[in-house]
Image 1 (cartoon, rainbow over the protein chains, first blue to last red):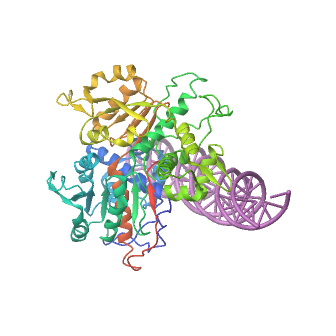
Image 2 (image 1 turned 135 degrees about the vertical axis):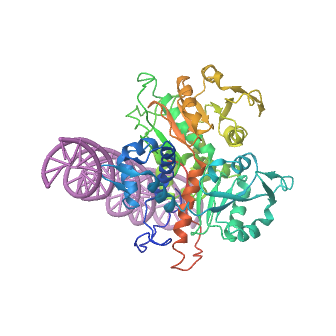
Image 3 (image 1 turned 45 degrees about the horizontal axis):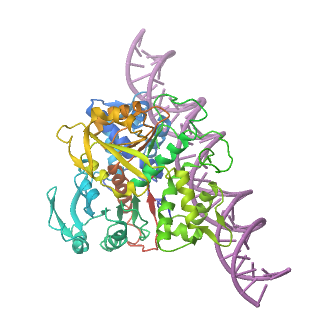
Length: 252
Length: 252
DNA sequence: CGCGATTTGTGCACACCTTCACAAGCGCCT
DNA sequence: AGGCGCTTGTGAAGGTGTGCACAAATCGCG
């Protein structure tokens, strides 16, 4: 989280999720960030043959506190049965609906260095309803290259293609120096969500959401904890082999 | 964040940072997660020739509120001068010390698929004091391959090498199915920090820190906001082109 | 030497998030 | 039909994080 919060969705017609669209619960950011994790756990459970799952079971699979899980799910409007648990299939549907994963979203990827290549070939995207529909790079030697069935185009085409393909989400995997310019083009082309892997702060209009992932930052946070632990081992005993614990997941 | 918090460092001899080790402020997690961002901004400013910087200037470069920045920095013990600002070089040193970046940390990387390859070649690690010293994979066809001057070894060597090289941080970029087994080996070898790119929850002893990065989750969070925005555009006007805003950075 | 401009450091109030603990609800078994 | 055990949903309390607004401190200039 940085400059500003995600504009607390103002009161927005409650109503049932009868037809198809409209109606939107005002979910806390923290909850949203956990929904994908629940979804993954549910898919695993479903493939393992479970029909229903208790909050205890699901929370264990997702690595969270069970009370937190229940409160999260209660925000999307009770889909559990007391004494029984949650219907796995139903809950998957509900979460996918809330996350908007039922509609396949077009994604474009800009910057095809090491990381860009990896992202282009990443399975996790397609399996969650995302489809990378275009690749761009500024380097002429990369343009024309074929990756995962897509041809890399020159960045000058970005604006036009983004509009044509109705792209809503852009992924920036360029060097820091180029990121802001790319973001500007994306915004002009109507992209309203950006996933930024470049180590820099992007400046965008308020209606555009930016999420930043910086791999080096993650390591630095771990480094801090290493440092802290090292400065502690002098005093107490070493290895305090306790049970399972301390996961720290990424996301606001 | 998931199962458990990072064990609130208990009261731990304050004292000055005179000699070299010992003495550790009890920093809030949220602050720690922002320090690397400040550090990056400071390096940029330093290269641009700035000797000092105000909290206003630095906070803008890091994309945060200036009061938050001051409070964060005050936690590491006043290194600013009222009426002037912060000494860039001094502050860099101080943050690097707190994050433990002054001591080069050995990192190993397990799993050399698309993502693993990208990580092995990622510049951002070396430039922040991390050195990847070993690569491992279970696939015999990958063993022996040379990447960035390192030879990929078979995962069976992981335990031995991790101990020999005194590796403190392990990066897991394997498929989900293999991740837990790899984590177990890492833990046995004395690794106390793990960066997990596999989409699954790891179970580790309480003294081991795990940070998880899941690229698909980031996209799903963006998808939610797309969904929300789409369900809103029906009512108010479109493009509410406000100034710079809404960054959402990753990290607890 | 004193004054004003500037900027840090922080007390305080508020909002968000987490966790416990328990009442309410549901199904099953007798 | 009634009771019992199980599980959800939630009120309330405590903790963490955020941001305003201002006092305290420092520098430069007349």
